[in-house]
Image (tube, rainbow, N blue to C red):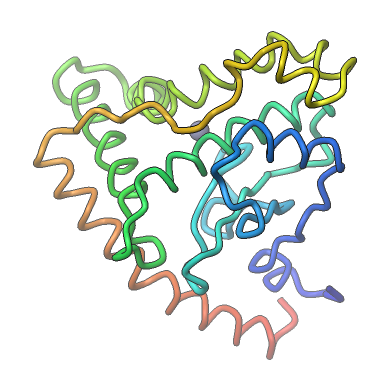
Length: 226
Ligand SMILES: [Zn+2]
């Protein structure tokens, strides 16, 4: 994509051509994910560009069936970290598919509703009840999030064997460590109903407003040189 426009670049992160071996690993490690529907990008979604996230997995809000894995700076990561972050984000893609229903609509899907609900619930418990400071409560809400714990566990299990992966053919590696093959993500505990309602409301608001804001920004990017 030819672009001298910062806003345009922010709105359209560049797709990453993953090394063939890494794509084979994803395919064999997560055999139930339709990988043709998932694209990896170098650059976070624009509304996350100022956060400390190094990667994220999100559904497309324009094309119903598409999902994206976004890296803050793919090239800046070591080859081992690239694989490790990718495996973590791919676990979220698995969670997304496990929770998918025909009523999903852009950001409005069960994965996002549960993600927001647990995040808010854990933050509320630590900030308002346990009186932990704001930053620590945010960290707690992220690292104790059941959807993150499962993804980090899987990432750590892979990372513990990464030298084996680097030294062996993908099929041989997964035959050595069959527990790394994910047919289904771990079931997610139900959050408190109040926070699930709040998560649903926030997800719905984002699902409605994001395509509108993004469409406006795309037009602005086309007619300006910001
Ligand atoms: Zn994660």
